Length: 598
Image (cartoon, rainbow, N blue to C red; front, side, top):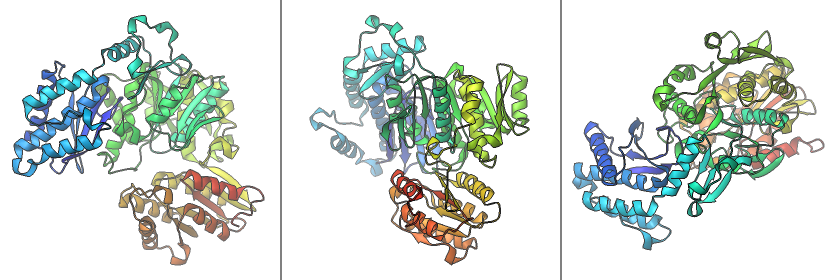
């Protein structure tokens, strides 16, 4: 097929502040003629259906071009069909010998993908027949009641959550959910019974889960029953509702549809935005922690600028009177923030945080009465509503590890701005920050510290170069130059070779005494066993580490056991562990009386 990953975008996304459909054209890169032909065909199809002209975007990337169509939420399957037809018909017209088989391939794929082949209306490429088919599909899929309900929610500034099976109007304690086939008549609905809850979206390359947990802790201390989703699952206060990576739309929907939930903090990962769009139509607060190299080569994102555009997609759903919290220490975010209004037709209010209170972007923003947060004289200061609040000494906040974990200082600053924008009092935020991180269960899997018979052990989730650099900076601080440094290194298989090698090079910068190269066996993601450890070990040896200090282990748990057996009192071990099962097993090794590496 001349395209892949043809998919429906059920929320605001990289391309539009609306729903739509996108396919990645591969094999043939659309030049001006091909792109114009695709656009013209989409336009004629929409006109044949009596639809208004659609916004269309063609976005080039390393493997091809993403062709995106904005479309109503109730006809996304049909929008996907129109997109596939428009591109396929364009290729057939331009390259008949090469793509003469295409109609048969589309028909075969449609039958194979159908739950009930008898219901399939076979794809055709001839234009008149294709338009007749689209009209049949429009009658089948179009849902006027759904359109009216979404319009009603929009005029009332109500959030909604929509998927293929159900619609939720409102959120949490103020929400109600119906099956798509059982939607109420909008005129009969008691709209006054529906309501919003304080909701924050958190995205970025590093620090998302920590920021989510900080915000959730602040909202709980504020007295709200708080739900959140992250890479570890879905949670409501102390209750685990689901375990696993729920940082995408499925996790957000579960939080927002929980009837006990009075506030929501939603980790919003890059992959979910690209695959499906943002799950919620409206949020009070958005946070972008930072942009760093990760996941390049997936869904047409090849560089930091593209990744920043993905993360900033959350701006489309932050309410006009809400707050989009951005990291002023990230040059890309500073550069792209002024472009949001042109991209989405509107832009929310901005709040900026940085490590330095006197950062130029913060000073300019405060001069315009904007909200900021940063460190001044060793203390976390926040300005909001033209008032200044001292949230305490950074060094005494457990999450900062004496001020050495600068990335967590940034997380604290961003979370502080978001918490105040959600209505939490500064004194409550200060009290939470004074305690959060004091025990490992506050932030599972992130900067969890243990003393094992004089060996200091850190269990963390560092998964890219910047994350590992931050972790090893803290480890060196804890060692104070006295003990040896040991670290585990591995990577998921869906990263490019250069990304994997970059992690090894960061580790080598710190000249550790031991680097246990691990197989991340739960995240091979298409790679052969042993492939990633070979890449990492070769990069470490090339950087000058001695062979004897770079052993290879076949699993995360085996690697942790090896490091623990090597360590002696005074050493520091940095253990990035990514599989939840492996983490649980490693934490069991660190429990008092466990025997450590035994």
